[in-house]
Structures are given as C-alpha cells and as structure tokens.
Image (tube, rainbow, N blue to C red; front, side):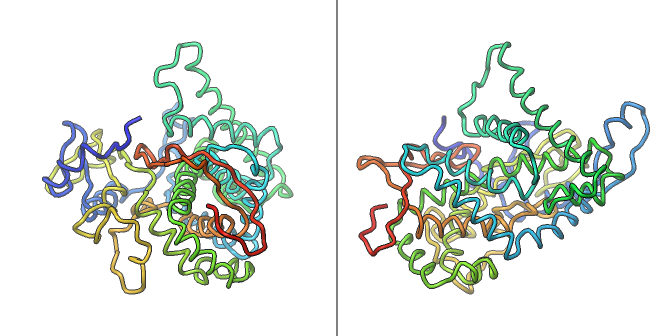
Length: 410
C-alpha cells in the first residue's frame, strides 16, 4: 500500500491553484471554494433515480427529492443524539472495548469494530443475531477493500463472494422494512423508522433499501477511520491525553450526555483537529449529473470530478502550519468557514456530523479515563494515507485503568 496517495497530486494542485485535469474525463477539484461550488451545482437537483421496477416497466416513478429523506433523518437524529441516545451509545462502546481487553489487537480494526457496532442500532435496530452478523460481514468486506487488505484481483471462484455478502445484507434490510410496514409494533427509534413510516410508499422498496444501505455503508468506513486516528493521536501525544483526562475528571457523564461536546471544549478541539489532520475519506469521486462549469473548466454529463477534504485541510493558503497537529488552532475566534469540511459539502454533507463528533468525544473519554492503550516498547506507529488514513504498526493491548492515582503508561 502506498503510504500517501496524495503525494503525487500536491505539486500539480499547487501549480494549478487546486483545480486541474488528471485525465481527459476527470477533473481534480482541490480548491475549497471551487469544491463547494462544484458540489452545490452538481447536486442542485436531488431528485432520486426511478425505481428499478419502473425502469423495467418503462414508466416514471413518483419523483422524490433526497432532501426529504435527509430531512426525515435529521429530525430523527435530534432524538438519537439526545441525552438517552448518547448514554446508550457510550454504554455500547464501553461494552465492546471491555470485551477486547487483555489480548493483542490490531488497533485500527478495533476502532472500526467499536465504531460500526455501536452505531448500527442507530441505523437499524432490533435485528436478530443472525441478521446482525450478515450486516457486519458486509461491513467487514467493505472495510477490507477500503483498508487495502482484500485481494485486488481474486480468482473467479472467490470473486462472487463480496457480491453474495452484499446481497444478503440487502435482503436483511428489505425484510426489516417489510416487517415494520406490516406491524406497527415493530417500530424502532432508528434511522430506518422514518423511511418505513413516512416515505416507503413514495420511495418504493428498492429506493428505500438503497437509502438504508447507503447509511450502513457510510458508518462502515469514515467513522471507524476517525476513531483509529483518535487512538493514534492519544497514544502519540500523552500531553494531550493528560489534558483530556483532566477535563473529563471535572465533568460528570450525565452532563456530557446532556450537552454533547459543549462541556468538554478541550476534547472537542482535539477531535476537530484529528478530523482536520487525518480526514476520511481522503478523496471523493463524483459523476457529473448535469453540465457544470468549475473554475473555468466545463464538465459534461458522464465525466467525473474528484474532491478531497484532506487536500483542502492541508492547503497552506487557508491553514497555518497545516502539517502540524495543533488542537489549539481551534480556540475561539479562529476563522475556518468552508475550508473545514470533514463531513463533506452541502447539499450532500453527512447528516450524522453532530452525532459523529459526540461519538469521538465519548471515545476520548473512555480511552482517557476507563481504558488504557498499551503498545509494545519498540512500537513506532506511522500514518499511511490511502482511501482513508490508516495507522500502520499500530498493534497493542487494551486494559482497564486502575482507578487509583498512578503513573500514566500509554
């Protein structure tokens, strides 16, 4: 795996002001303002594609705007991100970490496991153990590809397996949507419920399944990558880990659940800087949906443009010492605007941005007050920049901290 997929793009990007052609059909858009405008123009019309059934029958589907789906999710997330929701999320992460103590671990995989499995009930709750296993298997298969651990060109007798896993996961979602549509008593407080209760008739089953599986895919990658980078920085920067531990010692967990990140400003700054310095995903490829013009370049339908939040966050035109990890750059009054985009650009930015920040702050609390990451004495982990940032050589053990005052080991 290349240790930095952006290395060869930085020079051309700087020379071209952040917008340049990589191939005849692919425009790289690494300038912050141009990226924001390109995304806004490309997704000005967010009407969902026609249902598969209607395509087969050669008839139009009921038009539905993606904004309606996003609006329904945002309303539900206000409940899921409330005090009870954050307490439940924290408890799930605590339980998952506790189950992994005392054994040698690949810490980036641990971060992905804890992140995905703790978020899964927020997207799709009430699954049987067998169905949870199918959803998790699909997430693991996607993660293996994302982290460069899957075969690039598997033999034909193995190439069908990822498709089979994905189909099984889709069938789980389809069955759950049908079950809830038939039985009002099957309702759950998750992101699947507003699809079932308010939009299933308009969307149709195919588009409803796509909506839910899109969120499942989203929580299988970037959140876990961010969690792994939080672990990496806490281990590499014991001074910041001590500052966070001191802050959490003065804040009751109930207050943290009620206020989200507001009562933990140091941890909030730390997490924001992790997301800036190690942004996931590294690049986003977008198909051109309608003819657009980007920084003087014309793009036609069928061409592609590539956005990179990571390149925006490393642009020295907008960031002081962009290669330096400095959470104090986020102290009150620092300007950021559209130059800080860890959750993407409007109108397709991540709907769970607020919850994602809270999850990472809660993870910091667990790792600074309840658990301890212990690396082998000779370990020197480094960061590789692939599709997502990935700490390398980052294996270790997780232990429960001694509540008595003691010297810090990790």
